[in-house]
Image 1 (cartoon, rainbow, N blue to C red):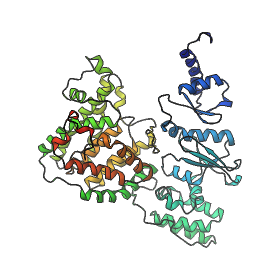
Image 2: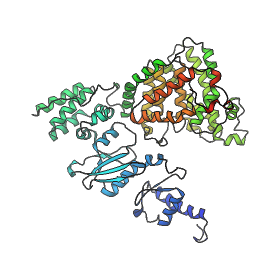
Image 3: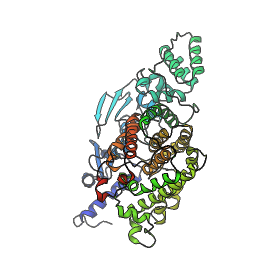
Image 4: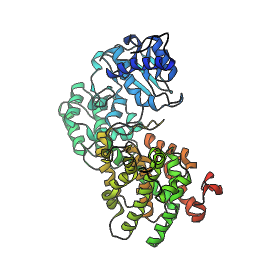
Length: 540
């Protein structure tokens, strides 16, 4: 199949090496241990590494990679880190290992962000620290064989977790203050019979007191009382104490509800007051005529499309935006238009913006709640955004059907969106949270944040979340607000703070700051063409 090695071109040599790499991946090998892959010779490895198709992790271990990723790009590593740790641990310890109780409990509670420092336990470990790429590390902690219990994680990474009841018993009291949300969600999930049985079997009277106090704080008063009574009946002295330092956020819903949904409910409850306070200084329009508001939204279209598409990395010009807005874009008759990814994005944005303006007018002219109307209409937004790609033959019609069926990762972010199965629980929960919220500013800011947190689609999440934000702002008395490309770094960093660390303040400050800045400017200033010099400067 290949020409003689001495006569082969560099491209043919690289193709031969890629053929070997593909054969390994076809066998389901995601992490490559060089000593276990003799077909991947040193020549093949060096050739693939030089071309960027393989990256070393630690000595003797490699990961397939995207050659378009720069050396500082951490996206692929964060997406592959847990898979690597599982493969490395299996090679070192067979199946005689598990994650630490702390990390296991985080996983059980629906925490999806990447843990840059991972600790695993094994009787065969030697308390060794291993550095990993991008400032990550692995610590292999030696434990007694009898402490090793666990079951495979339901995720695709292959990590072995300490089961939920055992993890709750084993974590230190500091976990309840350092990871308050994870502890609360875990306490709402745990089976009280299993938990009590383990406490009795191990004679854990002190831990039983902590569990009883924690259960009561999490709203399971009857179960807390039952645990204490059972322990006392067995002859144990139990002193109940609450390990949480402050009252817990209200979650609501069912105890056995998806941990991702419980996490969302708790975040909304704990974040909303800070958003409400930030909106106290934000000007709100009173009694604006519907047609006047719609004219204002239409006037902002070109500027809004330019900034929103530029934030997502599309290379759009004002001429392109106006071309599709005026109906001059035709993928059926123009080969250039058909092939232009940027033109398709601009056309989809124009269609969605037009639909949304009409929809806002309908909602404001009716008595229907904006959140209820959003739930009924939202699927049309996604279809409008991507139907041009279907028309051009780039996407299949079935791609417009609904939520994603694969895992997604956000570039260079520690936050990992929930898996595709969890999305089907999270999106109805988001609709419920929006309907239960009475402050339009909270619906806008937390609705935007939660939508990106869930990341329900393979593409378009950023644009759709900003459409959601502006729909809730304009139907709540606030102006349509452009998230400018100049604020991109601050905006994305604030989203990461909220997603990974639960800190909503930076994101509320970014959005409210943009509302205040643009509300203080005449519409002519906001919508001036970039050739006037204005769009190269912050809108402040």
